[in-house]
Image (cartoon, rainbow, N blue to C red; front, side, top):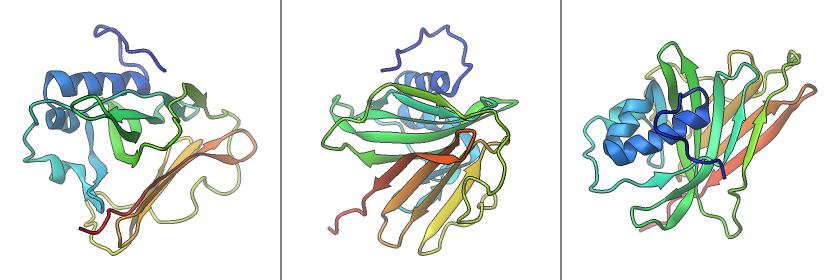
Length: 210
């Protein structure tokens, strides 16, 4: 598993950012950290898609934060966009599932633009893995040829929310879709020099009826 970094270590990669994010959740408070590291147009799920800025605005921090640690990371060739995955744990340190977070780096530093999770599978998927896209220029179709990109702060009220994104150099792409029941599919594609390979396909089942 990717080792935790020292507090003084520079934040140069999305893994560094995720570790600093998790550290801030303990130090500053869970939702305070989520607000601090979220991009203006970041998306979360409840289970339908919501704008993180709106959802997090008035949330009070719990007494103790959840914890998480990235164990897999997939980055674009230019290193400015990445998707991290790893286990997350409840406040009493029980494995709750696996998170998937998309990070983008701009002039203001790393910020997450997508955050979601899936239940813990019967067999562990938390093996250490770091993979970077090929820098051979992509040709042909884009990595995601399905739903259109959401406009900033567009209302997410449809019965079937969906969205997509890609790195500026088009070597990393992702898409997500939530159906009317709340089941969410999240896919990540990485350019390998010949084609776009699916490296993550995370499915969050619809919530059980109460």
